[in-house]
Length: 325
Image 1 (cartoon, rainbow, N blue to C red):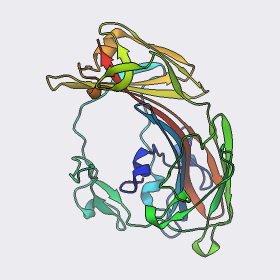
Image 2 (image 1 turned 90 degrees about the vertical axis):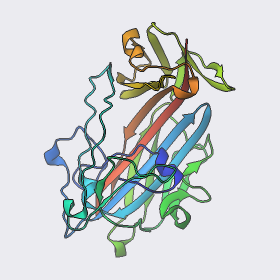
Image 3 (image 1 turned 180 degrees about the horizontal axis):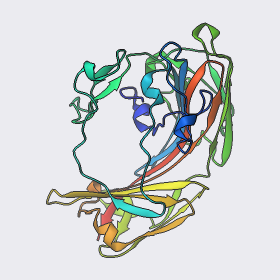
């Protein structure tokens, strides 16, 4: 997947492609139906994400894509979220373990590399096998369905070759994207690089917004929600869909303890997290250290001669400070 690229990449919740070399993600598909990596004819890997993100009351939207020569890691199956529907679980604090130590632990064409945080420090346990490669230019593509009309996305040298709307870094002005809309996209491709004419579509559900608890002042000039210690936490939200809503509640107390819970909910507009589970999040007294995250995602599809695998998706994310009382 995408590791060290521009800011917008860090905001995208990407998924691996699957299907028989022509369409994007469907993690429910049987493993035998997924494409198999062919080192002699890997084809092209494509990603495209449309997203709406609200961080502490500040809206942001994404329109970001790109094309790579397909690599072995693109065909790996993502680990499924095993949290039962409409339940929450305590997040494990186990120390992550890398998948490799040296290049010899990887396939011949791969290297063992490590991820780094924003300050340039290595992240323990992030070692993974990755194929050295660059994003490629296969011509522009047109995206239909946005509020602002058709969007042309093309190779952007200033963003490491990611496909963006002209003059952007992968983020676009809030209000550019439409919701409860099926987007379509197309491009001519580039036969010289092994990609034919491209078509596809993806559905952006109705806009996600938290209805309750109500937003309010949580201190230090910040807005967020208030949670009462020892009580159930009932969440209601708008823009429900036929899919799932993932919710994470994490906190840190002044004692240095931290906790988190992860919920997979039916996206029907309401759910109550029991008080005993809320307690597992170990919310601290300072709202700045507590975070509630809600995420809704959908998968789309893409077709083109030479497209071996694609990750086409929409994502909507809310990140909110939490004051515990």
